[in-house]
Image (cartoon, rainbow, N blue to C red):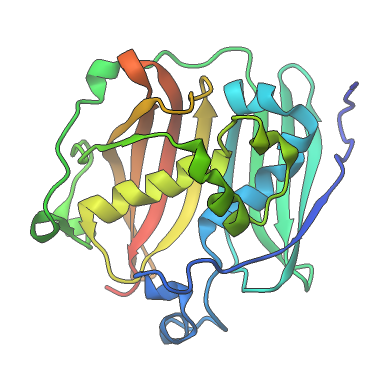
Length: 271
């Protein structure tokens, strides 16, 4: 289909689901969220990412999932059962680019971002992302930026992609796109795995995923052995909240690059 700068893609509307209500991270419970001034349990950032990207997936399909990019930043919470709307506007043609926004039921802006179909992607040197065993539960870094520094290598996540289990994930994302019934992995699944890397490396209490920037390099194959390797690239403190950012790479077999993710989270809500 032809695209024009300034044109809006069809918006995507969905009733948000807090699938994390029983999660160990109590920011997804009403009681835990209230401790930090929120009106209710927070819908996970993984779901917000899924909602935000849906107009792009609808417009570009598998081509974007294989070679596209997206940056998402979450700026206001979404609560369970809110009707949310994802909008995308074309910002450029060569390369094809989009501005993304996510609104809640009160029309408050909750997430912003951008997406693109880049003509080239940076070369990834797998040697810069060494494999490291995950620490035992008692050996995880404390959830404070004082415990890590830029350059620290994260323990690697290793797993087999099983798309037979994807229906449960799609239910959590409230995503009924037929695209994911054809052997294609949902893009938000990679963000869920990036969260898992944080959870396996830090002794986290309540924490909040706040941003992700993803570049897709290739589609992962069902049954393929994948590893997620990475390192800390930045730590910061804002209004008493301590933030860690990591660069992660999803490698397929023979170190084939599937995606890169720059992932940020508040690992300590009050310092």
